[in-house]
Image 1 (spheres, helix red, strand yellow):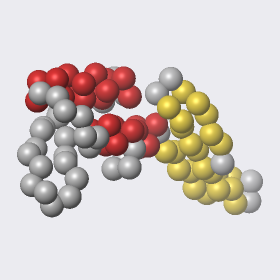
Image 2 (tube, one colour; image 1 turned 90 degrees about the vertical axis):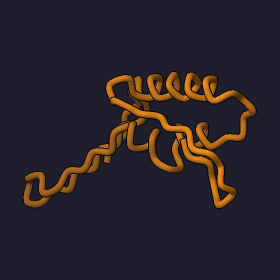
Image 3 (cartoon, rainbow, N blue to C red; image 1 turned 45 degrees about the horizontal axis):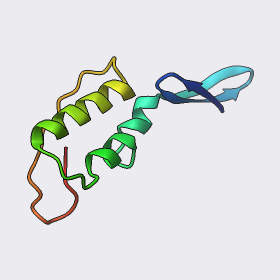
Image 4 (cartoon, rainbow, N blue to C red; image 1 turned 180 degrees about the vertical axis):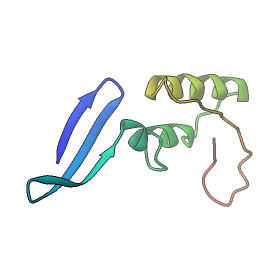
Length: 88
């Protein structure tokens, strides 16, 4: 197992060897951490900040670009129904 810090966050690589050959390899890119439901983007998106929808869209767009500018994204603001966390 190896861990590398990159400009976009932590990259994890796990390799299983058998008889001197790679039998399995898994790579977990930074985007998997950053955009996971418990990750930085969702934590920030679900935080209770009193702001206009326009300000929220700008803040979340900048955050998405900061976390991984190579990924296409779409942000949709959804009204809180009181049945759990807000989605962004």
